[in-house]
Amino acid sequence: MEGHKDVLFGLYDDEDDLIHAIQKAQKDHLDIHDVFTPFPVHGLDEVMGLSESRLHIAGFVYGALGTLTAFLFMSWVFTRDWPIIFGGKPYWSVPAFIPITFELTVLFSCVGMVITYYTVCGMGPGADNPTLHDRITDDKFCLAFNVSDSSKEEIDSLKGFLSGTGATELNIKTI
Image 1 (cartoon, rainbow, N blue to C red):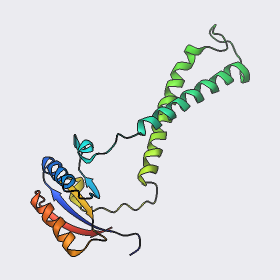
Image 2: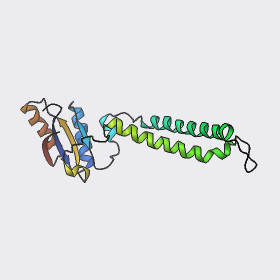
Image 3: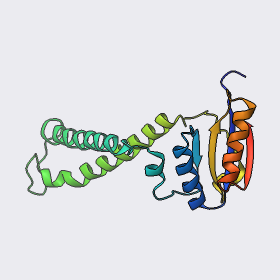
């Protein structure tokens, strides 16, 4: 099947067992396809050697764009398009702009980060999201290996590795 891959995965009951399995897999130079957990596991990124997310940089850029949009729009409206002095304030009253500027900063940042996250993760509308096992999002921790191009001996070796590190269940699934 084109575009499909076979994934061998082991389910663990405890996050510590998963962390130890990942450390052993890296020590043995095994290529981990992915790790799934039902909740964030402290220290998992460091153990897997993942770099820090750059999503916060995008959030800052979107927030700055929201700030600039709000401030420039209100400046244009109150000085050029609809210049009215009300409440004794001058046309260009920066303190009066603060609430709307803050709200647009938060709005642009939030919406921009959500769109960026979904785009980068390939989770847009109509995306197919195959699941390996229903209990991964419930109470199981999963360590997965791509075995599409692996020989039977390599698969048996990975099964032995998963069993030896405390996996309670082993499965192969095509996704």
